Image (tube, rainbow, N blue to C red; front, side, top):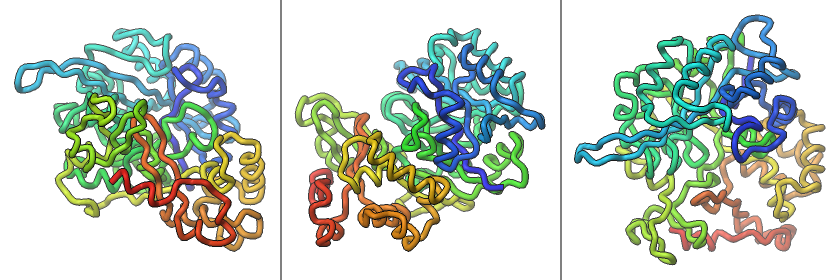
Length: 431
């Protein structure tokens, strides 16, 4: 049984999320994307928890729930913010996000009771807890049930993550101490891929997983990163076992890291984006405003790595890099909005012909695509995307990266005037 799973997303009760981030819309667009297993997100929020209990069914008592042909596991994300003393006896503030999976509603209620002792749960789907370390969190969760699965979210994001440049650790053991034995997986986040993480040998014993952290149900957000399993039977236990052991875990789906909002260093307000090399030349200072740059993921990985790019640990899970189909259509049509009616029209026709988006991105042959797509540039972009042949203008300081149409394609007569996208030449200023 092939499982396409996105285990980290949110509900309409989290800040800065879509008002239609409910089980109905996530099920609908998740299936269109090609997903068949979702994390509920935000089960700590009382209104969302009540809604989940009313709508999700687990007739087999497997820990996997059903709604409108979509499978679900109970998940939530929380933020731990706390102070620690460093060796020089000064205080550092740590801001670590964690994703928690629960095997059933009963244990989820116990988790809610635990969290409620440390702070409010009703103001945000992703609650914040102070004076509660990551090590203490994991210890307390394991005292409830060893079946609870917890992992650090988007581990390289600058502001709220395990290795974040502004509020994280340099070593995972420093974060979890004696409870590290209960951490089995790490979420790579949009701005890094497994190959970047393989450079850090301290991560070798952990399973690298990928999820969307989506705040809307649209298929260019939901499932933009995912995990693919081959399981005899889908249960909560079989899912967790596959993650822990890497058995039956086929591959992860990643966006190109440069597409992520924090890949390179930069300043959004100053329109400054820099590679780690250029940033270091400027000593991490913005050349426009003179303030410290937001240091991106690639720079941070470089700082903590002890191996060159290209190194691959034993038993590493393979990965495939894919940009969402909406992004490809947008660039083929030279449009500015992913939510354009023209894009949806083409997208819906493709889904009608080829079942779901992952099938289109991963499997449908170029010949079959040409029969159904009038736009030849779009066909080329789909195939280049599959072969990891697209170049991305890197994202930085909260700004998504952008596709750069290869020069050799733009030089072809039929495409010469079809796009105003930046050329490869424009990338040189970043390096």
